[in-house]
Amino acid sequence: MYTGEGSDRRQGELYKVDNGECWNTEFIYDVIEFLKFVTLGLDVEATTPEHNGTVSYAKLIRRALLSTTGDGLGMTVQEIYAWLEKNTTKVAYMSQNWRGSVRHNLSLNMAFSSYLRQPSKRQGGKKVWEWRLEPFAKKEVTLRKGDRCVKKILKPSQVLKAWMVEVLMASYTLRGHHSAVSNASLFRIDICEWARLTRDRKLDKFVKGVTYLDTLRGIHSQDKFLFEKSTSTVPGRERIAQLTKT
DNA sequence: CTATGTAAACAAC
DNA sequence: GTTGTTTACATAG
Image 1 (tube, rainbow, N blue to C red):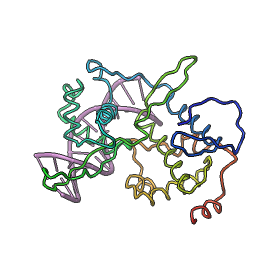
Image 2 (cartoon, rainbow, N blue to C red; image 1 turned 30 degrees about the vertical axis):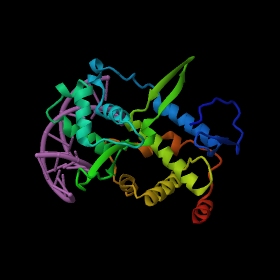
Image 3 (tube, rainbow, N blue to C red; image 1 turned 180 degrees about the horizontal axis):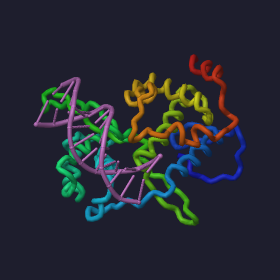
C-alpha cells in the first residue's frame, strides 16, 4: 500500500506499489482518502484477555485467524471456538448461544471466507472447511492524527468498503489498466464482472440486489468516495468493454 | 442510523 | 448433531 504524502496531484503519473504494480496517481490518492474516511474515529482495540470482554466477536475472530501460523492456514469453527475459550474472557459470560453468534459473524462478515481444507489421511477424506481472513482484513492502516502516527485496524463492517476498493483494483489489474472510479454505473459494471470472474457467492448476491442488511446497508447512498466524488480519469463504457474483450 | 448481539428457521451434510 | 446462511428483533450509542 502506498503510504507516502505528496502535494502534487499530476494526473496520469504512475506509482509503483508494494506488489510491483503501477497505479495511477489519482487513484492512489482516492484510495488513501477513502481509507482515511473509513477509519476515522475508531476505538482502540483491547489486547489483553482482561479487557477483551467488550471487543466484538468479529474482532476476536479476526485475531484468532491472525494467530494461525503458516500462510493461508485457516481455522475450523471448532478451532475458533477453542481459541476464543482459551484466549479471551468474552465467551465466558456471553449468552449460551455464543457459538451461534460466532457462526453468524463468520457467515455475515465479508472479512471471513471459508475454504475446503486439504483432506489429510487421518481424517479419512472427510470434508473439512476452514475459515480465513480476507487479505483486506489483515491489514493495519497507519494514519496520521495530528502529529502522531496511529495504527488502526479497520472495523469489519466498514472495511467492507475498503474491500470493494480491492475488488476494483483487482479488476483493473486484470484488465491491465488503472484508473479511479467515481461513477456508480461503472462501479456496478466492475462489481458484476468481478463477481462473474471469481464466482463469489456473496458478491453475486450483492449484484443481484440482495442486501445484507447488517453489513451492506447504505453502501450506495452513503459512500461518497465511490459514488459522489468525481474525478476526470474514468474511462468510458466503450473503452472498458474494449479492454475487457482483449 | 450504525454497530453489535441474540434468537431462530432452515438447508445441507 | 454440526455447519453455514439468512432474517428478524433488540439495544446502545
